[in-house]
Image (cartoon, rainbow, N blue to C red; front, side):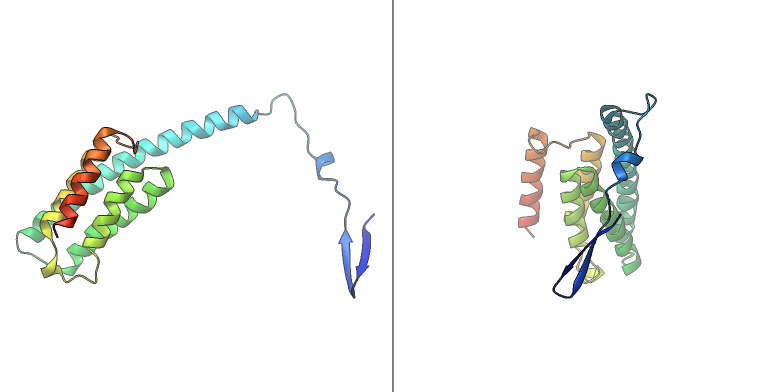
Length: 162
């Protein structure tokens, strides 16, 4: 039975809470611990796939960079690098790859469409693409990893020289 409460010209309906009585757990159901283990295993698989994707995208960005650097500068190639790095950045943050996300963010910033293709800092882009590839290849994910700390410092130094 629904209990109705009248208050200041409004009616508040309080239906009975029967949800718990409708939920059953049988002996074949998974425990919370089992569900968490399966989720962790799935996440590990996604992380491995992501690292493979980062390496492949870094290779595409490097080939595109090579074409641009050889003098064939056009906004379409610039957009390719920016789009690939944007995809990496977004997924990196979701999967907890902070350093990869930071590097991809910088690539996004320095290849943004607002920057004229003739004004691109090709050396800075190259360094970041190489760093992205290296970080994914070596699965550097811990912010306290000495390699991550050194890489961050080097990239910050490179960016500050611009």
